[in-house]
Length: 365
Image (cartoon, rainbow, N blue to C red; front, side):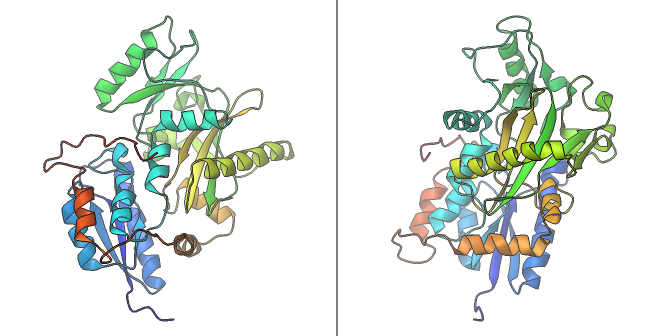
């Protein structure tokens, strides 16, 4: 059946000329998705999401898209607002690809995600996020941003070994002040690093990050830091290479990682696509580090490389995400029109006029 309305909004965060490489990457995603959607017969329109929800709502109502392809990773440079994109689209009752607001909020807050993992019996390293949390003295920890993904702020300086109680939390506070982002500490797991991407809940071939030169990736500690992910000219980038080749001895481990990734999909109610990051300790035990509910899609990314290993073309990935969206149960929420002004007004109240936005909480979790 030929569609009358072919408009599709590609929603993404606003970026500027001075944005960091991880932020600018979304523009590459927009480019690839736009080309693919156009080849599929759609009329793609890219739209940058800001904290001016009332204006965004008006724009969406004016466009009246068939659906939204959601690529939003942050809003106003803040990862803690990532869930507001699907929350807005839910209020406007516009179908969209990818995860729900609840899933994005759960997975983007790393300590919250770790609590969920532990509660469901999935192994994740111990962590410290406040002064009352237990600390392992003389054990290495890695200081991470609570909300931001893409290894933002991670480097060899992120490793800290507390010599006495209280010093780790002080280091967390110092890093938070320095970076302007809330941080926590996670026990560092010596060993190998893997990730498993999923498409529609099905695990794709597992990948291992092979650290070729320890001195280039934090000396005694192998950290996949920001430069190793985003600075192609750096030694860290050149010495942290993904591999899909495993020995027969690793097949059992790879199978276990895939099963754990599938459990994460269910536990967090994921949709569309995702990636789960692991560390394997010297005893062979897997530990879940993070669950990324909207990993980068562009060629060269870990997710894209996994789809290629599975023999899945980029266009097939996009088609899969659209099909999954179309198979979701229709909302039973009553409405007076497709894009109700009253609905958008409610979501617009989440933020004041100026960008002094407070975290709206996790009351819907």
